[in-house]
Image (cartoon, rainbow, N blue to C red; front, side, top):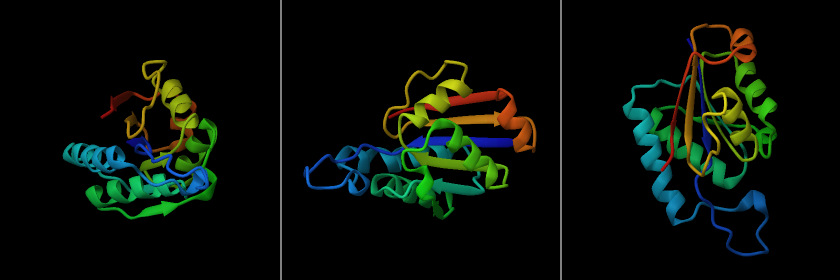
Length: 155
């Protein structure tokens, strides 16, 4: 079975206008939501083979919290910062393992989740988790077909 989990980074702090977008940290809500969402996902028994994250601070922090709950170390990929939907999917598939979790940003996350859910997911709010499963062990098949099932959760 091929599994793709999309996690939009948790809520970030807009803070100082001098702070670069890439360097924005999580705010109090993000620091509350990310561990809670990670624990909910871990409680489902889902195992992850790879956890890929944007290099932006808010994504890295979210990924670290999910990684701690799921027992997997995040792998940082600078191409995931602001990545379009197609690149998010291609990056997960290229990892070459069956179960991949990706932490990244909108609008790519929402566009991909909306596409894979056939419009069932209209928006990925911060720290939302969308899980897609295909009854195949072949990412080439998975990326060319609709998932067999999907689930969505948001704080």
